[in-house]
Image (cartoon, rainbow, N blue to C red; front, side):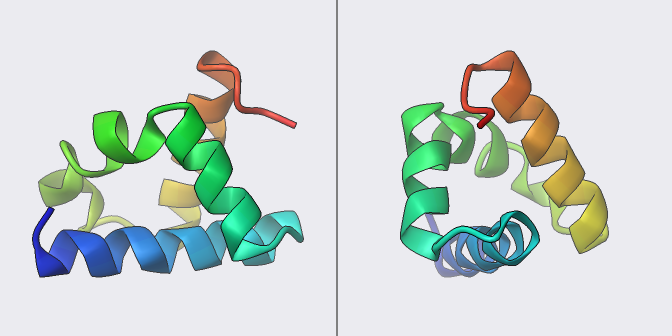
Length: 71
């Protein structure tokens, strides 16, 4: 993971944290446990970083539903 990807993931963790009312550490655990970071966010960084925050957070929510990370 390069610096830009790292900053992107951190930004999205905080965006999800605010929307879901959860701590950033809780969001990180959910994303890590479902493979969202390594299997979705990083591999698709080139496309995702051009999208709006709300769109990406919605995509993350859909990913979590499919891969068992939904609350």
